[in-house]
Length: 121
Image 1 (cartoon, one colour):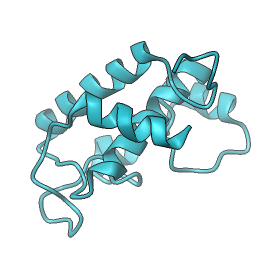
Image 2 (tube, one colour):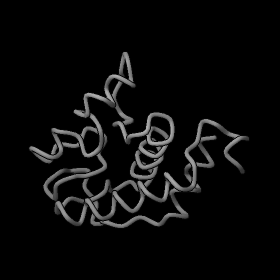
Image 3 (cartoon, one colour):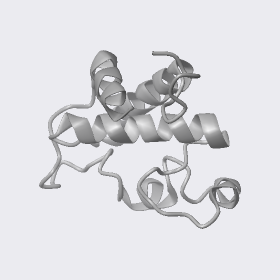
Image 4 (cartoon, helix red, strand yellow):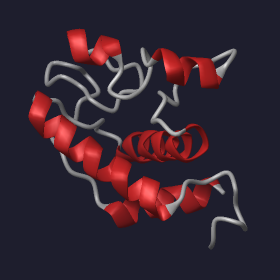
């Protein structure tokens, strides 16, 4: 699959960047990915897609009237202000250990994310 074939998906470069960022940030903040790895995969893909389309990893789990304006405001660019200030992740990407949905992983296989991404296309 190539990007021109499926514009709904992120580029490899952005996907790899968001994959690396997610793992590093989880470890740095003591948070964990969702117990259901497909949730993590979909969110990482969404961040990568926004990075490609908007130039920044805007939170993919919210509705925006104007995505460009939101990117410039930076509040919802990942990691968003609620995550940075209170460890509250609306997307369930970065979960505190006491969260019922938190798994035990701070890593996710890039190939797994690509498999989930291809199923989205």
